Amino acid sequence: MKILVTGGAGFIGSHLVDTLVKDGHDVLVIDDLSTGKKEYVNKKAKLEVLDISSPSLSKVVADFSPVVVYHLAAQKNVRTSLENPMLDAKINILGSLNLLTQAIKNKVDKFIFVSTGGIYGDTDILPTTEVGEEKPMSPYILNKLTFEKYLAILSQGKMKWAVLRLANVYGQRQDPYGEAGVISIFLDNVIKNKKLYINGDGQQTRDYVYIADVISALTKFLSSAEGLYNVGTGREISLLDLLAAIKKISGREPEIQYRPAILGEVIRSCLDFSKVKHDLSWQPQYDLKQGLELTYRWFKEKR
Ligand SMILES: NC(=O)c1ccc[n+]([C@@H]2O[C@H](COP(=O)([O-])OP(=O)(O)OC[C@H]3O[C@@H](n4cnc5c(N)ncnc54)[C@H](O)[C@@H]3O)[C@@H](O)[C@H]2O)c1
Image: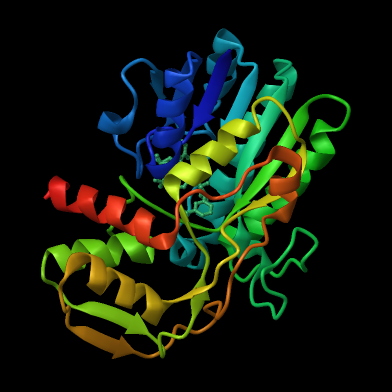
C-alpha cells in the first residue's frame, strides 16, 4: 500500500516507517529535518525534505497519490509555542491544513493524526478516557486539539480518519536535547555522569509508553477503526519512581538537584486505553522496566 508519513525522520515517525517498510508498504516520508535525522529514515522509503506548510506539498502528494497518510510532523516544543505562537500555528495548524486539503483532494482513503494526551491538561479523573474534558494549557496543545476538530469536520463524507492521543512516549532514537522526553534526558545524563534536575517535588506523574507499543497501535489503525483513541498504559508513574527505576537499571547514583516547579506544568497525567483495547485488541506489551532497559542499552551503545 502507498503510505505517506510526515515527520518520518523523527523519533516516532522513523520507527513507524521501519515497520511499514518491513510489512511491505511503499512509503514516502515528508520531513523538513528540523528535529528529525536523515540517517533515521529507512533506506527503502523515499524521503522528500519539505516543510508541510510549503506550497510544493500539493505536487508531492499528487505525484505519490497515497492511500493512507500518517501525520506526525509538528512543532512540538511547548516553550516555543508559548514564545512564538505564530510559528506554532503556521506549522501545526496551517501546515496540517495544507496536508489535509491535499489528502482530501487526492482521494486518500484514511488520515491518521498523531495527537497528544496533553489535551486533558490537569484533571482529577485518572486514568482519563477520550470523553475527558479538554483543557489545553499551551498553544502547542491548543493547536493539536484544533486540528483534531478540523480533521473531523473537513473529512466528513470524504475520507476516513483516526486521531491517536499518545501518552509520554519513550524509547530508542528519542532526542535527549532541548525540551525532550524526561526519560531520554535522564538516561543520557546518567550515562554521561551528569546531574539530573527535578522540577518541583518529583511527585508529578506521567504515563510512559514504550515506542514499540506505540508503533503496534499506530499500525493497527491501517486496516480498521476510525475516530478518537487514547494510546497509553493506564499506569501513573511519579518522577521519583522513574528515577528509582533508572538508578536500578543503570546501577548508578546520579547527583540530583531540585528546582522550583514549572508554572502551569500538569501535575498528574495518565490515559485510559480501554477503547483501543476493545476495538483493536491493542494493549501495551512492555512494562516500564523492560522498556527502560532496552532504551538504556541503546543510549549506552550510541555513546
Ligand atoms: N514524543 C512524545 O512523547 C509524543 C507524545 C504525544 C504526541 N507526540 C506527537 O508525535 C509526533 C512525533 O513526535 P516525536 O516525539 O517523534 O518528535 P520528533 O521531533 O522526533 O519528530 C517530529 C518530526 O517532524 C519533523 N517536522 C517538524 N516540523 C516540520 C515541518 N514544518 N514540516 C515537515 N516536517 C517537520 C521533524 O523534523 C521531525 O522529524 C508529533 O506530532 C508530536 O506532537 C509525541
